[in-house]
Amino acid sequence: MSIFSKISKVFTADWKTLIKSTRQLKKDSGRGFFDLLLDQTRMYKRGGYTWAEYSLYEFDRITDPKLRANFGSEYYDNKRLVLSSSTPESRALFRDKSLFNERFGQYLRRDYLDLSKCSESDFMDFAYKHKVFFAKIPTGHGGAGVSRIERNESTDLQQLYQELLAKEQTILEEEIILHEAMRPVSPTSLCSLRIGTVLQKDGSVVVLYNRLRTAMHDPIVDNISRGGGYTAISDQGELMYPCVTFKPSRRYVAEHPVTGAKFVGFQIPMFDQVQEYVRELAQIVPEQAYVGWDITLNEHGPLLIEGNEIPSLYMYQAAQFYPDDIGPRANLERIFGISLPAPEL
Image (cartoon, rainbow, N blue to C red; front, side, top):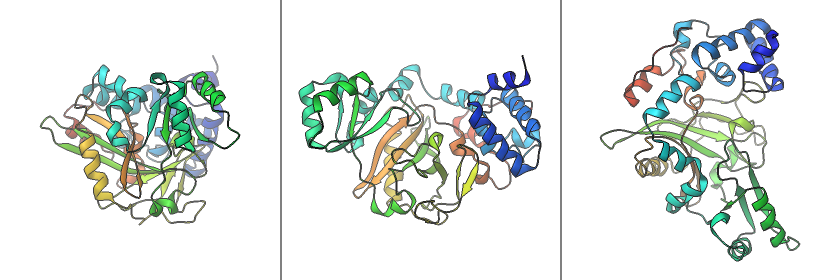
């Protein structure tokens, strides 16, 4: 097996994305292309770090094994965190939007319909009521399987109903109109706040992180895996750093490419309400103590989009959030109350 085949087998990324990413790392660090490929392979095998984490944690620049080990990995450390703070049943509830919407219905603060539990007549009523709505696959993730449906006079609703069933897009949700104050940093799609919470044994809630996610060009979703960017939010609701993205390669974006709005210093409206809202959400399913909540805002306040039962660690740990290059492994151990053995890198 060639070196290319070995590396291809290791990474979940397609070759096109991996090569683009590595070329950018080469340009940023001055290191050799094959040196970086082999190093990414080694970090995956020894520590469980994905190619995206390698890029976001700036391991092309941070080469000291002790410093690298302070950043938790997706496949080793995050797996331990998730398994220590959830049950198979709670993860299944969060993974299935049908079950999730039923449990958290009052917090969605918008109309929704589950085609697997209703009639064609119910769909007709929903479609007539909402000219625009979103259709989702119950177990989709990363923005996959999401469609924006806009009805007009020529729309054949019976045909649309059958098409949605055929595509398994059975979760329908009323369109959310984003808070006007958020438009400068999200002009093309609905943006969200990814907020990680950890429910403690005494019933208190620790907010592990607050992040803004926004689309750079995608008109439908803000997912980082679809080319969106994200940045940290201060305790006062102010954006602290440029947005970082890793698709198709790592880059730091100081201003939104469509509006020119500067990210650093931008103030999130109603941020106090958002914090109270997620603390309330975190206590509804105590069996799922660790959740990454996707929250957005309309003119009336925060709305729940979804809860992620396996929130990716990279949302918490991008290197630019840790100017001293020391990642948060110790803080994760303290908050979750478990040991995360440092990998031998």
